[in-house]
Length: 175
Image (cartoon, rainbow, N blue to C red):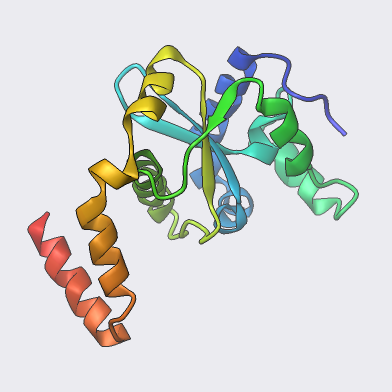
């Protein structure tokens, strides 16, 4: 098993590595639909970058190294449970259904759509604890900021598949 990430900075580099290479490696990007724990940070230009915990939590991981370990079968797989505990020293969990959670979900979905991959339904996020990200965690509150969206989601759950498709088309036309 490779060594766990040695620092906050090396974890950021691993997120960058995933972000910059994942779409070029079908064997890597297709796993994104099953990722449960995503690590994220906001770049200097305000864009979010993401990487799966089991990828970014190991020192010096690359797409090729990850794929090689995956092909080894269960004995070679990297362990997300192990990395989650280790990375918690540099991250903060994002509350499900908070405005920040929805923003991250939307940004990740946009990134993955380039490879025709969808975000898994059980995806959750932790953000790297930079000063800027910490402030975001404090200010986003689903009860205050997302009440209208949450009401629409609740109502949408009652719609038929055809109605959801029609609503989706109408919402996309607003953008």
